[in-house]
Image (cartoon, rainbow, N blue to C red; front, top):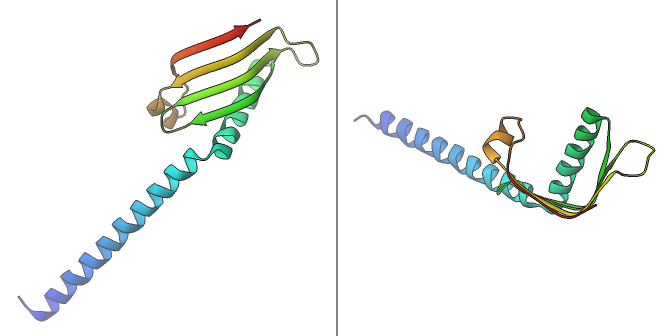
Length: 119
């Protein structure tokens, strides 16, 4: 094997290792970001706004958390009503398990829903 070929293979190997290292760091950063509570709250806030816009209802929750990696959604103090009217539904606590694969494709499908304190 010629000396130039060895250098070329060695350089290609270093570039490949560098790309793999960058991908690992980006994946770790994405996981850390998705696990951060403020990010989960913002995602839930956006989803509640979108659901309200689509349904014409006023939907809000006092407490919101989302574990995007495990697909667990928790809402506390959930209220639903017509805009400008008193709420017709109040829930102390709501928990749902989302199908993460579906969410990655832009669809929301739930595996499990639990409501506590429904009025």
